[in-house]
Image (cartoon, rainbow, N blue to C red; front, side, top):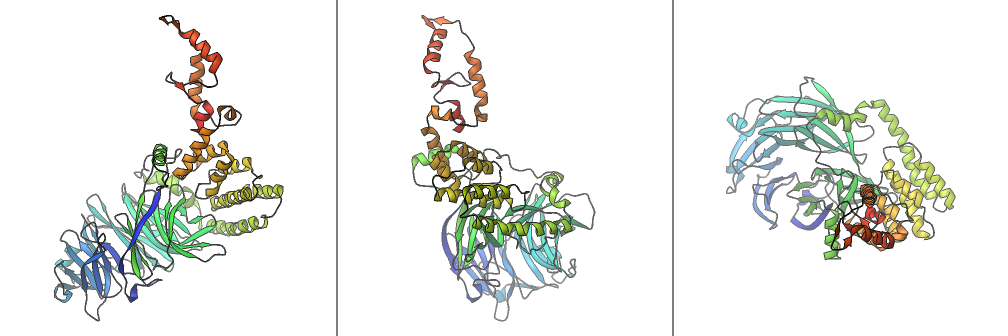
Length: 593
């Protein structure tokens, strides 16, 4: 589970570094050491900070009348700093340099969009026309002609990676509402162009990407409170001039009726992303916050409200978030981890103080997803999306929106309805065909049921709650009060189902379930419909072994006679395990544990 840890202020910001669009920094880049970052403001100055000490190590400015138009980066091979001011004036300097007027200067023939530096891949210069050069090649002839490969398109985002020993540059462009993606391999001198599949009725706000197993995974944040995933294989045989990139829905940024209007996102690991944005709920004022989501389990892991506002920018280095908050640059440390049931019990036995919640999904936990075959990814992740035409997508959107709006109104209207009417309407609502927001709808329905249970202690629709949990569309985060009510009622059937279905149950809740299971008598459990699937093989072995007769007699002891005595007196208390040892609990309690 992910958690936000301590936070601190790295530095104050100037007049141009305030909140809102157009504010903040020009960029934040990694420095020459792991604990260093380079800040470039929206003016003339770049500053090197040591994060742990919260102090600047160096500060450089261009003279008045000039402006830094490209963020400063560190050339990791030479430990020099590289920047561009006034679109095409290149500057290179070292730590000891103070006056940028006296450092290396070269005027280029075209405007620069961004400089990307990789620890083992050199420094790449991306021009606004889409041309790419390594810094070394550019310095050999600064006035060399730079090709224009994107015509009337405008670059919106770019990133560089290493594929083995080869640097790879990816950048996204926009023209008349259409988005295109370019992938440049420098050593092979190959450039591929793709067109991004359109998303109806929503605006593309932000990109991020990572590379693994020769596949680039591009994540796109849309104004529809959604994150989509696009897979781009680096090894292709096709020679199509412009392929269409299909995308699949990775995450819906909504929980318990609230939606996150994201502005930027970053990838933390294979299962977690962070999104900065405004959390909005019906009838409430929106609140800016930093959130961490689990993409595998589709859950909000943690969030932090930011009341002073942000510029909408978010950076992440060395397990630290960097973002503007009011008039300062704030740093928040985080961690993402997975734990087991044994760790949960051990931790809570040592200390009753709640620690960082972690989880493991018992049903779906598997080895890290393989990305070797792009075709298999298409067939699984992109199959339904790629088959949808633009017209059919519009129809889906048109049909879903009224239903989405009617759910909240329906629940509000049913607030004071009779129990029978209340349950009948909810069953009718859940019987409709699955829609893209079916998970959120299910969460709202369960929340409504739980609220009625809390308002009326005599009301407890166990069967209906059990059916909703078994839809596999829920998680603990969507209905956190459900298990609390089940614990209060000691509903072991519902608790067992939740433990099987929910991947994000906090450790303290798991421990509370264990205490309830251990407190219930064997006689009571035998009257309850407990799922014995997990111990069915042990039960079979037990009955098989009861039929085995041994003839061995040692020192006057007969195993047959002793077994008969135990069978007659304590059959209900002693149970045989597969290894022949006695188990102190019955099959029902064993299955629960």
